[in-house]
Every structure is written in C-alpha cells, then in structure tokens.
Length: 286
Image (cartoon, rainbow, N blue to C red; front, top):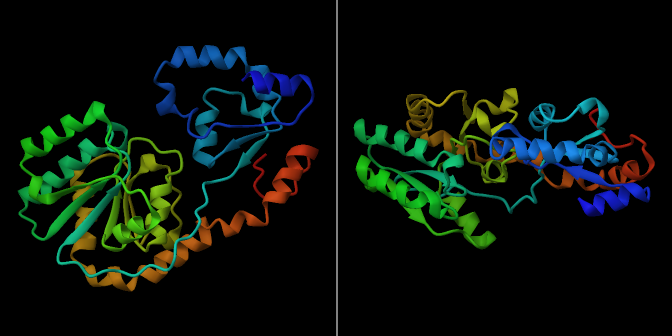
C-alpha cells in the first residue's frame, strides 16, 4: 500500500486487483479489521486508474464493501494457455476427479457425503480421485471421515501434481471433474478440465458463467444437496460412451472462451487505456 500511496502522490498510474480478496467469503475472516483498513486507504483505492475484477460475480461482491460508482472497472478473467490436444483414455472404472487444495473451503467434506451415497446404493466400478496440496488443519479430519463412512475403496489419494505432463495424464485418465466448492473467484482447475474435454459437476459457489451450449456438459448444483450431486454424476456414469463423443466439443468450447490467445491482441489496448484514460479495450465494464 505504501507503493500505491507514493504512486498517487506523484501521479503515476496504478491498477488495483481484488483477485478474490474482497469477496463475501474472504471478508468473513477479520471482517471489521478489513473494513477499517479499506476505510483508511479508500482515497488511494478510489484514485486507481483501474480496478480489476475477474468477472461480474466478483464486481457484485466488491460492491458490498466499496462504492463502485467511484471506480473504473476492468473485467478480465483468468485465461489459460491451452494444453496440447487431449484424448479420452478408456478406463476399467469410472473416474471422478477432484483437482485442488484439500481444504474445507473446496468442499472436500461435502464430497465425502456424496461418495457415501455411491456406497449406500452399491454403485460399482467408480473411483473418486483426490489430487492437490493437503492442508494440515483439515487433512486428518478428512481421513477420519473416510474411515467413518467406510468409503476408502471408492477413493484414491494422489500426491500434488508438479508438472504439465503428469497433469495431462491425470486429466486424460479421468472421466469427469467435480468441485463442490463453497467459494471460488475464477477457478483455473475448472477451465483446465474443460480444455481436457471433461464434463463438470460444480457448485454455484464456483461463480462460473454457463452458456446455453455448455449446459449439456456442465452441471451446476445451486444449493448443496448430496442427492443432486449423486444424480448429476450418475447421468454421466450411465452414458459413458457420450464422454468419448464430447471431448472435441468440450475442448472447442474451452478454446473459444478461455484461451490466452483471446487476450493476446488486447493487452496493448489495456495498457494504453490505463495510462491515457481511454476506452479502447473491450474489457472495460463502466
């Protein structure tokens, strides 16, 4: 903040990015201290050349804490450097991938309740793959719940992926991607899954805008209900042949909407706009 204060005093243009830190979920933690901090530095915040948000959902939540009429918004999502063309590997079992930090916020305990239904209904040849950094605060409780529900045969725990080749192999060997998260700003993992041609089962808390053409392969659960998640997964489970047919369609959708190539020619306009107060870029939202 000191750097921004200096920039404001010397008329140097600067951009502020919330990047998930001014949403309702984040603000619950030490809320009053954060609001006090915002009030102390609101002059610097409102003087920024642009305020970057990831999407319309983040802008809406920022409006709960700042006067958005005093801000000039640049809405720019996370774009992805598209991986090489993906193929669908034929598995002996149906594989549901959770790829992300193993923490309470990502909905890992809710996911265990969903998995429990597959045990209750005696669904065979299905495996839930958990891949990501383990958060110590929650991991032991996570393991305890697996043992309590007696669902270990339905679960495979893998170490964190460290390179693109292993990630590609992981996604290609998965059938669908799941994220019952309690809050996301703009999930990279969701977009990666689409680039690899994977259907999604996600929560509305992922704040992922779903077009009409994508509703066929993206199932959004509005309010957590393990039965709804179970039913959504089973729709893909009972029609696995279609998973192979849809890979190219899903990958094409990802490239048209999230590829870094889409922003490449816009960067010069964005930089120029931030210096000159012009509006050449299509990403300005007010």
